[in-house]
Image 1 (cartoon, rainbow, N blue to C red):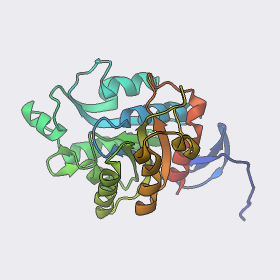
Image 2 (cartoon, rainbow, N blue to C red):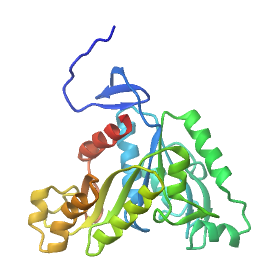
Image 3 (cartoon, rainbow, N blue to C red):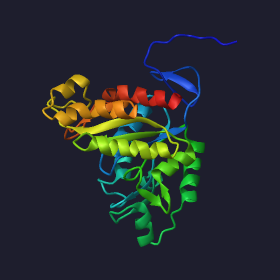
Length: 272
């Protein structure tokens, strides 16, 4: 017998359980995680991953943010992605648990590993991912660089998504040129049979002081025609939903409640 009960929104699903405000409602299916990648480096992957991780934890979901590799930094550097993931997410884990490989040279991880004579293979990454999946109900995987940046020999972040059967959320710059960059990245991801679950545009100029997430109406108030129209055009030409439009606010500080709309969208992606 199946009993159907209607619950008020928002709700989200993880680990075969539907949650709402931390309360278990009913069973369902889910992806074991997703990959947060970008059209390039420095587009906001770590910022989004860290804050989503923190928001999910506040919903009593045991989530682990994992970055396979980072370069151009060292463990303990306040600017390191591993440091930001740990401290923004308020995680008890060590940085070298959050990020499997750290290299000081600011180059692609494949080249950095060769320069440091470190063994770094596809099998090692997949084994690490499977270990995490066995220990955590939900994994947020943050890519290194863009979707076509080599992690190790002949293995990009898109290949990791393909191997693990995870969808990708693509983060792109909000400025002029992003339509071509984003559509090209989406086409590349899809050519590997990987689902692009959504796009987040980051770095909008904002006239709304302190406002991090922008609405369509907010875009109309921007003086930049490109920024006013990029989101609509990317969604129309790719048929991929725009999950969020994030303003360039310094420092980027938002209440966790501000992340609820994006957080619920992410959990609904994981429930499909």
